[in-house]
Image 1 (cartoon, rainbow, N blue to C red):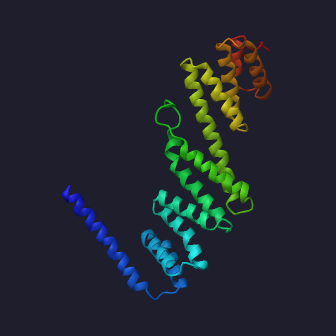
Image 2: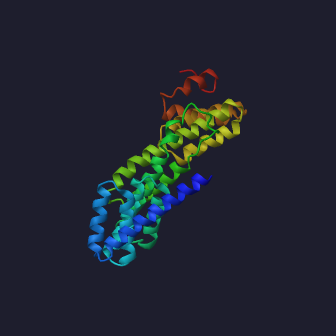
Image 3: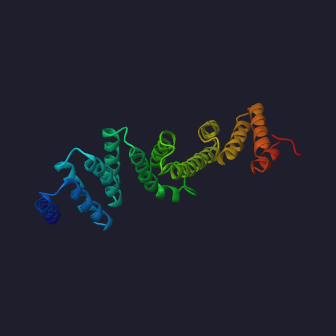
Length: 260
């Protein structure tokens, strides 16, 4: 424990020493020089020092275009330094302080990108796993909201096209995750929960391939609940809109649909 405390003190003192050196060197710098040096340091990959320089710029020159630009670049620097929480906080601060600034589009885009990357490990292990165990789609949903803001509020920004592509990917992934949950419910006899989850997919992700699976599972769940009319109606909608669905064979085998 003493070693850990000593290590933390050493790290803290080193950080304070670095800050002191920066302050001594930059005491008479102009805002332009602060910003130029911060950008150069950022490009060289020294993200922590770049953050300190931009923070020094904000402290020395809190008003003006360089300070405003530094506020958004700090968010990017935190992102590159693998500090996603600080990066999101900085992006949100920029949005709050400058809601009409054209760079707000980038602030939202950066938020989405951070949550999108945070969600990659979830995406990679999304299938073949009990859908009720250890899955958290909150990062994917947060990324989706941020990208949707970029597309709806800033459709002509340079980030809109990429945001739209990521939206399609995230919607498809979230829809498929919900289908995985619906299948789990169905296998375990929770047919009402199956139908409800399928309805959720159809209502919230209507233009994704998962809708076909949702209709098929819903028809089968209705049949198991003894709701023959709803089962047939759902199966007909599936056959009309998705004639290649593998669920059609199952529905015909269960005599929910007539054999062609």
